[in-house]
Every structure is written in C-alpha cells, then in structure tokens.
Amino acid sequence: MHNAIEVKNLTKVFRVLHRERSVKSAALKSLLRKFPHRSEFTALQDISFDIPKGQTVGVIGRNGSGKSTLLTLLARIYRPTSGTIKVEGRVATLLELGAGFHPEFTGIENIFLNGVILGMPRAELEKRLPSIIEFAGVEEFIDTPVKHYSSGMITRLGFSVAVHLEPDVLLVDEVLAVGDHEFQEKCYTKIEEFKKRGVTIFFVSHDMAAIARVCERVLWIDNHVLREDGPTEEVLAKYHAGHDAG
Amino acid sequence: MESLRELWQYRPLVGELVRRDLKLRYKNSVGGIAWSLLNPLLQIFVITMVMKFIQARPLPSYSAYLFGIIFLWNFFQITLVDGCVSILQNAQLVRKVYFPRAILPLATLLANLFHFAVAFAFTILYFFVLGAYPENLRLVFFIALPAIFFTAVLAMGFAYMLSYLNVLYEDVRFIVTALCQLAFYTMPVFFTIEQVAAKGYYNWYMLNPITALLVTYQRALLPPPGVAGADGKVLPPIGIPWDYFALAAVTSTLILIAGYALFNKYQWEIAERL
Image: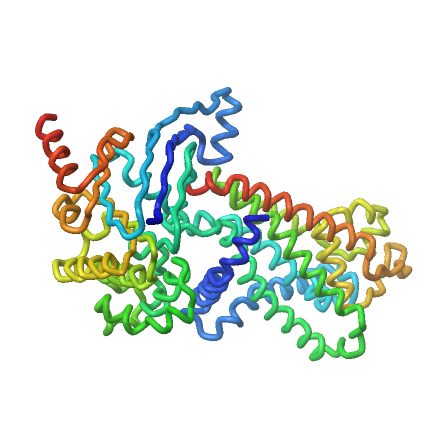
C-alpha cells in the first residue's frame, strides 16, 4: 500500500527576530545604536511518521505543543527547517473555514473565489454549485453579501466548499468545534463518506470524543516531540493517564 | 524556473483574483469605469488651468500631451503602491492557504492594467474628438504598446521588491507614496522633453527608465510639438527616443528579474512573518 503522507525527521525552528516594524523606528533605533536581537524557538523536533492512503489520523496534544505547526507544514504554508515532507494527491486544507471570503461578495461569488483559491477549476465548481449551497444550508441568503452572514453561516459555507473539492488528503484543524449540533452531524457524515472513498484525513483537535469517533490512529505531540503513535484507544488511554498523573 | 511553471499552473487563481479586484472596485458605484477616469481627468484639467494661468504653457494643445503622460504614469504609480500592500492586505489568505505568493502582486498589476486599458481607449477617443486624430495618427502609434508593456514590467519588478519589504516594515508604503509624488514632478508634465534638452540635461534625464518609457509613449501617440525656447525660437523637436527606449526596456527587464528573484528567495519567510 502507498503512503499518502511521509514525514521524515521533521524539525521546525522559528527564528524570532525582535525587530522594528517600521523603517522609521528602525532608523531611530540604529541611530541610538540599538540593534535587533534574535531568539530561536523550536516548534517541532525530529518528527517522523508515515500515513498510508485512506487512513484517518488524529493529532492531540496540549496548546502550544506544535500540533498546528505540523498541520501548517503539511499544508506547505511554512517550510521545514530540516527533514522532508511528502504529501501525495490533491490536498484540501481546512485551517480556517472561510479564509479568503470577502465580506462584500455574495455567497455565490465567494464560493467561486474560495473554490479557486483551494484549487478547484471554475467549471467543476459550477457543476457542484447546487450541492455546495444545499450542504451549507444557506439557500435563502446565497445572493446576499457575506458581511451580513452569521459566523455559523460563514463556517458552514467554508466547510461546504472545502469538502466539495474531492480531495485525496484532507487536513483539518479544530474547525468542527464550531457550528450547531445538526451541522456537526452533517460534517461527521461527510467524513465517514470520505473514509469510505479512501480519502486520507489528518485531523487536529482538542475534542477527544471527536477523535475517538473518527480516527483509527492517533499521534500525540507533547512538548514539540512525537510522544506516542498508535491505535486511537491505546494512545488516548496513555494521554489521559499522563494527564491525571501530571 | 520551477516557480514560474507553478505560477503558470495557478493561472485560474490569478484570473479569479483579478476578477475580485475589478468587481470590488465597481461593486457599489454606478458607472464604475467613469470613477476611475475622473481622478486623472481632474488632474489634467487642473494642470492645464494652472499652466494657462501662469502663462507657462509650452504649447497650445498642451492638454493632449498631458493625456499622453498622466494615465500611464498613474498606472505605474498605482501598481507600485497597490502591489506594495498586496501581500499584507491578503495576509489572512497567505497564512491559511498555500499558493505561489507571487500571484498577489501579479493580480494587482493585471487589474490595474485593465483600468489603464480603459483610459487608453478613452485617450484615443478624445484625440479624435479634439481633431488631433486621424491627422496625427501615424504608424509609430503602435510603439505605444511596447512602451506600455515595459512600463508594466518595470512596475511589476518594483512591486515584487516593495511587497516583500512592506511585510518587513509596514511603513514602506508611505515612503513609496511620498517618493512617487516627488518623482511625478520630475516627469515631463510641467515642461516638455525639448525644454530639458535645451538645458543640456537630456542624456541624464532619460536614464530614468520610467521617464524614457513615458516620453516614448507620448511621442508614439503624438508627433513632437513645436516648443518655443527662451529666445522665442522653436526648439529642435524630439521624436521617439529609440536608444533610451531600448535602454529602458533592458533596465525594466533586469529590475523585474531582480525583483522576482528577491521575492522568490524570501517567499517562505513571508507567511512566517505576517
């Protein structure tokens, strides 16, 4: 079986440059002979794992442990400091639903804009338009500018566009926590559908119940290193034990 | 090279972003195109009136020659300023979705090129109304097109450099705006290129690529005017400055290559710094 994601010895170090944000203040500081100083921050240290095609993997860990950085690296927004990442197939990233929505545009206009940004051709979007609108449940407001939408509606529309991409790999960050119960159920149904179709899902969440529900494998990132990697129940049990002890 | 291929693959996104820019500008205004013409037209009107008032108009059909400079200069300046903020303005997108970052300044350029195309068509129409065309419409008119093209190339090169710098320092765009305003007064707007030549500065003056491109554009649209010098004699007319046009084309291309290379080198840093 082929791997959808291969990560080898991945390390990400952020160089935080305590630098002036404007030319004006930089010029002033250099006159006063104050120069910027650097500090480094390791977000991820030597992480390796392979994910076979079609697996649903959850990532857990405390705030600031490096989970989201990992997802951002997989989405190619950041570049690794060292190590390699290979992701095969069409990737849909749900780091933030409705990223790239423009408040002045109507629902339909935003579907096209967002869809193209996420990598779907216009013709394909046109074909799926009715289904996208129906899934989001915003039929009545589809010609209204998005600035008049509630945050729930924006989230639903964003999710709907993303899941209609027909991705091979789906990267999800904590986005299912929003939306009402009914919409969450719809999302889980969609995720089940994806699993059946063999889509690889990479799922970052604090919601242990959600992880237990959809994931077959869990990566536990603790203090910037990969602490556990195994079947969901095993890792979750260790995670809870670790927490109770701590 | 790899990055250029990727840019090509993402052309649907470029199209969509250009469409977004255009729609946004015209969304809530009736006759949106007219609004984008209004500003430069007022500018031309005011300059013509001022020059008439102080009796410094170098030639009678002065406003026509202004048409042959102001629109292209405005395109250049707006592309610089808009391109400069294009990354910061789309920060939300850059932090959340992957796509070649070079797309953003490019989409800004194309949207502004569209506005310029409208102004260009308007200019030609105006020349016909004025009676300057068809009499002065010559074959060299077509040189205006490469002049526009290289102006776009030059603007793009600067926009790539500036958009990266603007991520580092947020006040770069104010500096750019101020410098552009200063640079405007060095363009042949309040005087003609013949007057510059009469003072003996021609060879220095034309080294600035944007000046050479604007003069080329103007002289492609209209034949050189008869400008009276200080002693009342007509100054030697200057047609299309072929040599400086060629130099400006080379300079612009080099600036684009340098700007793109710089942008590409640091494109990964951009998301981390936003």
